[in-house]
Length: 425
Ligand code: BJ8
Image (cartoon, rainbow, N blue to C red; front, side, top):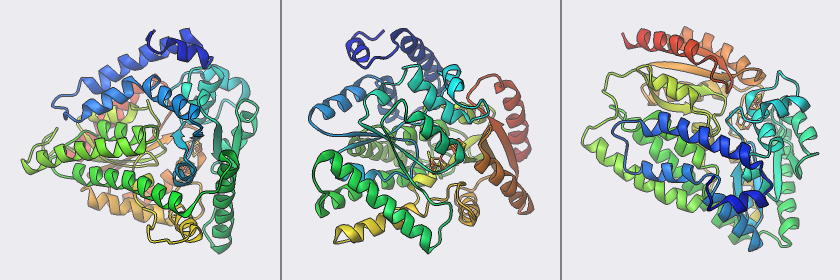
């Protein structure tokens, strides 16, 4: 056990031996997948540091912030506007979990045929393995897929929950509904902190979150170069860290990483050669520490050049308009920006097809891998439709359905290797 934080974890009522075992497995996993990479960028030291302190320093910061009166808000979806949390002086953290820990406990209160992402966050809470849950003042859910919606009903018996209603369509009435939900979340935060969010609070917060998205856009633009200057694994990790590190610090660190990549690009250097098959991964979010698919792809001769995912382009593509002068104008800007998210929970969701076609062109993609979590109806449905569309356009596609277990790694690797070999010709 890391003695620097033992007391803190005990105070948070974590299962100390289970937590130790989890950190040990994670450390080994991280070493095999990340530290073993050749020619890694110097800026990746920040990533290694943040991951090594994921349950340590960051949790200490959150607890210190709470002592100062700041509120910590835990979320599961990119629909919950981080700008409002920050405007209320709070800290916004993503809680989606990407590991199998606590699965048995989760299956005691959820149907077994629930997706791994949901089982994971429930399992982490029930098994007392996640210090983030224990450091939150409020957990904010959202009505996206049925699995999450129904889980929040049960989950509210274990944590303080607030649920935002996300519409299923995007017509004018749906926009009104969404605007009222954004306003209700604002009132909820104001009630928690005992003051109103001012025009200046919101303006600053919009800037902070836009800057975070802009640096991730810069990173994505740079990685699109040929030869690829940074591994898909590292970019995924950057995206994952963006959900729980301090947004201003994160932006500064990733600007430095981008400067280093820019130098590499100028010198024509890459982490793989220019003929390496370029893969776009589409579909379900990959929450930390879910690194399974990019690792399989990049150890099978391909390189991931883009993730069409909420832990990827779906979260950073659109910025909030910064020109609003009143709180109401800024709320409208937030509402419009968030309604551009092309989650598979919407019907119809035609814009996702166009967005994927744009990414294929922009990143000079050789093949698409659809990443679907078992039992995730929205993404599984869209994957089948997208596969047909992409096939018609002559884009090679591999459709994968998996969960967080390691049992299917061998079988997946065989399929991915064959796919990469096929598109490499
Ligand atoms: S905006 S993708 S973060 S809802 S994988 S729990 S959909 S059954 S995560 Fe998501 Fe928001 Fe949409 Fe993005 Fe359900 Fe599917 Fe599980 Fe999922």
